[in-house]
Image 1 (cartoon, one colour):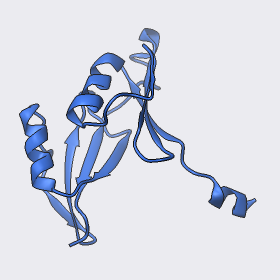
Image 2 (tube, one colour; image 1 turned 90 degrees about the vertical axis):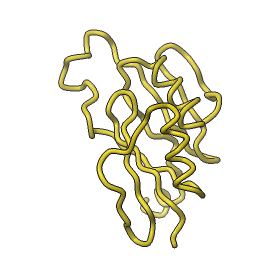
Image 3 (cartoon, rainbow, N blue to C red; image 1 turned 120 degrees about the vertical axis):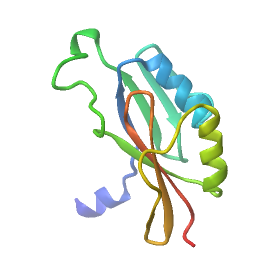
Image 4 (cartoon, helix red, strand yellow; image 1 turned 90 degrees about the horizontal axis):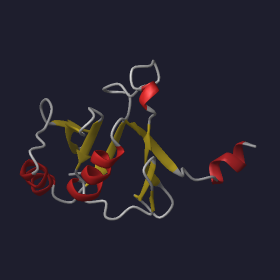
Length: 128
């Protein structure tokens, strides 16, 4: 069974969203993921690699204040970019500023931001 699991691929990362429309625009336009491959009022999928999707799932109004509602820091993801400074500038045009100090981890620059609902995402450079 372990060999079978190693051959499987990660299909997607789900971010549970209070406002899927706002989050769709953010990930499509600001993060520049392009048009979704699946797009509805409650479920949106962006292709982030040949086999993996970033998925936005609308939570129901009744769940907004439940223990299952998204919480800041509950979800985070990483995007590798060729030019960290250019990507920081692009996000700055949309009034998205880094959170905390830039760090270096394992020879890579790491800069952290928050999406509109407070989920962290990290921009990393290629190894230097």
